[in-house]
Length: 89
Image (cartoon, rainbow, N blue to C red):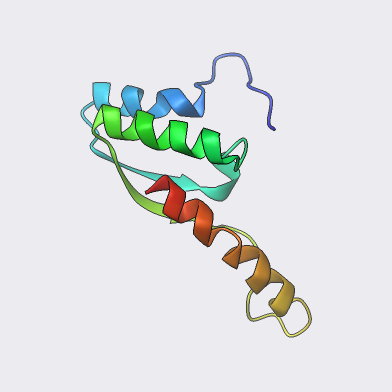
């Protein structure tokens, strides 16, 4: 789990902060998630829905699925995020 830094916003508070600024959509990268724990993902989804902010995209920004040597491992790693994406809505 990533430790918060002074002056930063907890990810669970981001949807409400976006809604305050009248944003109605957001994008999220895999590395923004401090954990992929089921309860945390449900809590984030609930916070996002409460704020009325749609998750427009969930970027899995790592790996090279076409790499001749590591592609199979990277593809398997990316696929493990499909359940996470579904949980996020």
